[in-house]
Length: 186
Image (cartoon, rainbow, N blue to C red; front, side):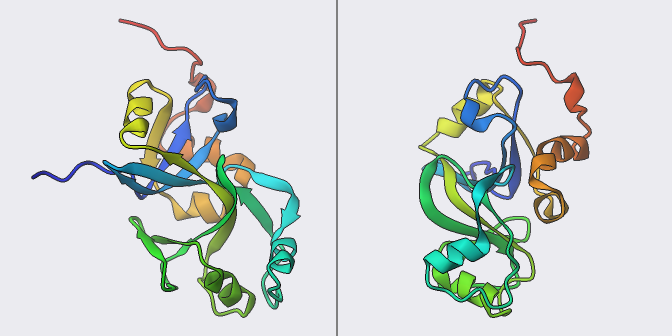
């Protein structure tokens, strides 16, 4: 049996005119993609009134040496659930390896490790995720709602969230000023 193609380890970029305002200019780091469904973490925007120190305070975790940085809007599903997308140099019991050298952890041990200065070298925290049922994402891709490009640690960890969409397209050789909101038929 042939392996099904997977978008895990890719960046999923919303096309202009995707039709769902929740995903306008979305940049999603795909973590899981199989015939059973897909899960990704939105990294293209941050939550306006919540920082890491505020989140750690809500969880009764002393922020220690953790910088007080923004929390990402990970997606429209389970927006109260936390996710840490990070470099693969750290792993907890429930860490998932993501192709392309990243990992995803959803348990509090990673936040405690970050606060103690013992966590992964590079990381970002998100609330919520983008999720698709069996073959749902494949259907959206066929309708030209999304563009995929290889995962880039520099875009994920070095670019400002508001710039990631354009930077990811540029890294793929696409000028976003030339993208159209509609498709045509040949």
